[in-house]
Picture: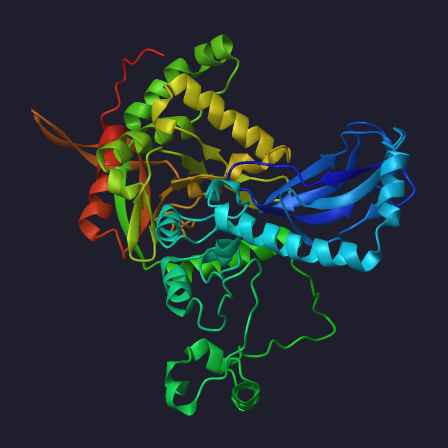
Length: 465
């Protein structure tokens, strides 16, 4: 019997880990090739992990709710393929070598191998963790290996290493340990004299037992207690609700939210869609909704104002090359998820319609893949679906802007003509733009949403599709 290691597969360029939600097999169960062994969750997407071989589940290495890194072994499967046998001559020769000699040789070799590997491994693309271009550049300049970089504790979103994290690490690098100039590396704890106690990092001081003991006596502010009686029902948040809660709080704490609103006359779009939607559905087999039309206008406006298509890393702005539009979509359980339209500016209206409908369908039927919700650079949410006139959406980190589409309503409006002004019935809606005031000022935020409105109001009623 041979043993096969079932590893967590790669699920997208930016997906580094997953949470085990359910084991579909238990130890001793027979597994067929391509049969699902367990269920995992990445962010808000659930997936199954199949086996590439047939056999019997021999060992489970992680339990439900454990977080596993991509590439880690999660189970051992015994297969029918016989294990390769070692040469008897080699086994006999090794057996004749005294154990203490083998150990004496193996220990320095292992230490040297680990040291050399850490020094030469500077290919940061090999890491399963996300590092920003700025962090990688600093690490390269300071000759920090991938192994060393992965050990740095990040204070950014989802534990990511920020510019300040790596600079602090470099500043304190080598203070606690001194390398010995030979084939192995030995760490020495060097006691610090009282004269240099002031140089000890604040974090180290905070970790001392005495300070921690004092900290326990300091009362932390707590939220007001919730009164519960026998008539109340207590419902625990599911995994997705906890994720949404965490992401929303994190976004509010990260970005300085500010909003701009504008009312848009979409009468031309309304009339054009009514004229072409039946023929479009017969020809393409797809329903033509307002969403792809709005997405097209947003993508055009982003090309006009590329500084909306950015993210922030410490004191640096990362300007995104691709325009990847996130679109809020409903899941089967009523929660919302944000699948991403990749390279939205390269799609024509037919392509945009097919992509929007596909993502919405797969979201509703829990068929989205982890990579479908990664890489967004700007998000659009349709609050009008629920009848809301406008809203103040929370930014989808690490983006810096999000646009809310209000409900389209028939309203009386002043219509300007060469013959004079008169009152008429028009189809209007509100656009609500939330943006991060750390990097997007009112002029840019307001100009961007105004440009979206202009594209919508100047829509060509004679457009061919």
